[in-house]
Length: 328
Image (cartoon, rainbow, N blue to C red; front, top):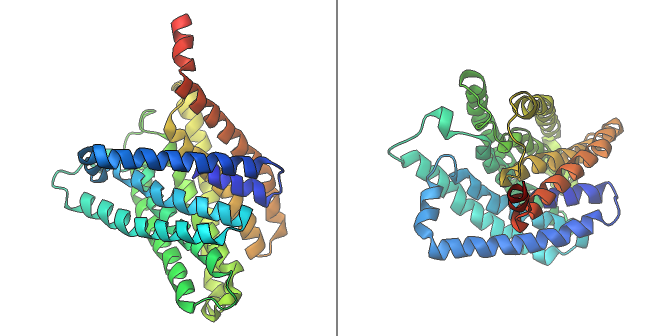
């Protein structure tokens, strides 16, 4: 997810070599992660099933959908490979049906439920990311044929609206958890950046529908609603950014929480890349050229964040940190 969206951002802003390099890394990572997931499915099915019904870990399965569709979008934009993109979209849609209803059914019927304080976190918002990724890739694919089916655009519009509904529902619980329960450095994890990332991808889904409205008359009829709703979500995402940076500074600078590699930091990189892309597309969709200044600067924040987390991953996998501690 993180690598794919940063690659797309670099491509849209015409940064040489970076998009293609990240695409190669993303394909390799996607294959490896699927192999590991399948091995876990066949050899550790009980643990996987327990994770599905776990309030904190279950929402993480939505990354299967989001990662699949982000890669499909990346391949479509960078290589024009519609066949592979269609295959990934169909896979993502199938995963969406299975994961969406498996996770929400499991956490609903679970007899012993955690409190809101311990049971909810930013990872819940990946459900919105997954839903909007289906809408975005589907809309881009439907824009290719000369006479795309109206039912297709109806579906991607409905997915956009479902994502909006889920965000407004879940973010209310997260905001309540933020403001009325104790927030420690241990619980303020990087996935809370998805507070912004989920609303950023919602902005991108709305902007993608606006930019392709000429393919379906109904989209033209509801254009004022689409533009207003999309801008609303972009403004909400922009509001989150300063607060998240302040909370990060409080965690690491004031509370001195150690800044060491954690896979969850990819949950911070993705929103930074997504905000870059969504602002780029919003500027085009609403014909606001002055907004282009935002992605032109934000892309470097996203690239620096990606590079820092990637270096941390390599160091973690090679045991560099462990060797350094032993030498000390």
